[in-house]
Amino acid sequence: MSQNNHNARPCLMDAWAQHARPLALWLTTRTNDAELTDDLLQEVFIRAMVKDYAFCNISNPRAWLYRVANNLLIDHRRKKHPVPLEQDIEQVNDPQAVVDTLTQCLSRVLSELPQPDSHVLKACDIKGMTQLAYANQQGLTLPAVKSRLLRARNKLKQQLIASCQVKLDANQQVCCFTPRREKS
Image (cartoon, rainbow, N blue to C red; front, side, top):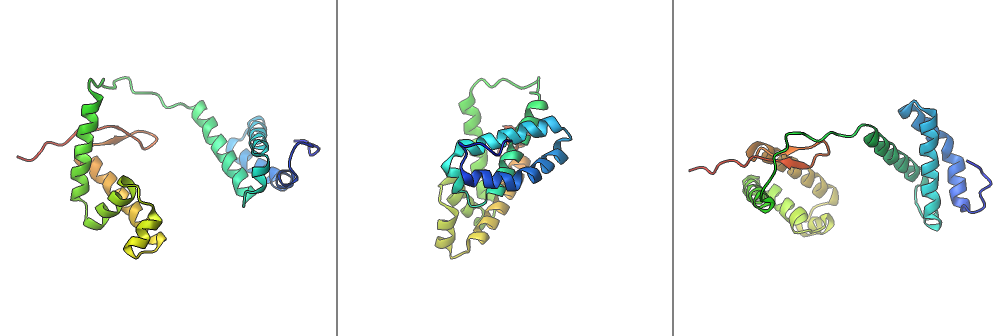
């Protein structure tokens, strides 16, 4: 990259001068491809340039540059190795019926979780309460709420997999499920 780019902000050029070489080494260890590293570095620089004055307000330019580089590397790998769709995907005639059935299963599984878990999930994930507001309301610290919410989400996920036979795709998104039968 040319250091004589008069259109770039000095803060960007300073950050680039300081972090470009270590960033290139970091990318090279992950790609083993000098040309790809150069392409990714160029794209990182372009994205930083696009931010213009906003780049100067970034509190940690090094972290921002590495995050952008990592995201670009992930995108490159996804394009290089796309996840094939299953050929035997079942056609759904009534998508709303599927959503309704999954919603019923979710409600049932939520009610089966321990009360503290279902309470934090309902407040933060369903009703949209912020974690900070929940922490204040319950007299907890924010890290405690984050931890509690993470554990509750994991329990919910395991229950959905076990009870509704929910299956997740490569991106950890629900792709399909088999609802359990109601107990008679």
